[in-house]
Length: 178
Image (cartoon, rainbow, N blue to C red; front, side, top):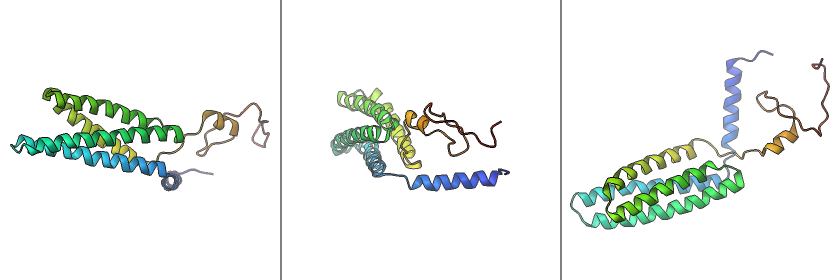
């Protein structure tokens, strides 16, 4: 059978549509928390700008917003840990932990008045969180198969790649074997 580019495209499109149906409730919770985190952090430069334009209430709003960003970030770390344990996907937890470390340094730099660190780190955390938002929403989080389970199944994988066969499985002899 001849495999054409159109066949490959159809297979990829059907795999992608199947993948969209695999988004689980834990994934939706992560998406919701990351979205709330983005909304909370987007207000921070606005409140800082209000303060810097002379309205001193902006500093109070900026401090309250920093608390909200931190609390939502901690919830996101917990959701990332749950995703790691339940779905075997470590990257949401690791990315959120790195982001929270940067946000914590930025939080304390702001309290200390170290604006030389607070401003650039604030820009970097907003960019990192938006990148995480795009990563979480652009693809479904699929459960990774445990390597042992993949080896035990043997046979061919979807897409034609050969899987490692378990030593317990007898090798099948077919017409193609010579």
